[in-house]
Image (cartoon, rainbow, N blue to C red; front, side, top):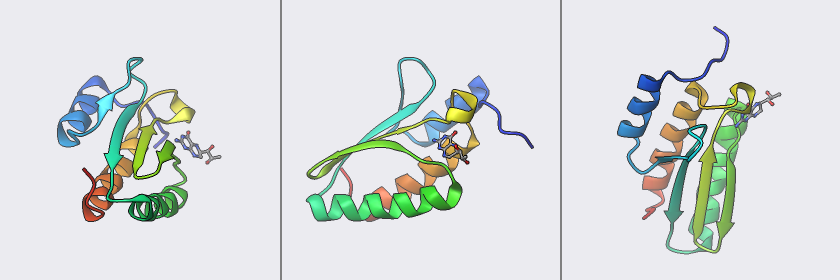
Length: 102
Ligand code: H2B
């Protein structure tokens, strides 16, 4: 199946099942902020996400300042959200919980 944008109802499901994420103003991406105990924990989390992202061939837009991480998920190939963002958000939520994200 070719990659396509999520329908409005799929996007609403994504947002309700991943409550810590919010829709970017243009509706083409989701964003989540994380805070960890320290830099080591934050970077360990980022390392896990990076390896999974590369495995999925779907890469986050992100930034890190000491213990804080901000992640934006969007699919450049469809100029919006796709199932790949759902899959990566799912992995990120589990990894963040395991790393004690606040
Ligand atoms: N990551 C994201 N976030 N969106 C994409 O459309 C995308 C990607 N495309 N990673 C992939 C790589 C594509 O450029 C390569 C060629 O598969």
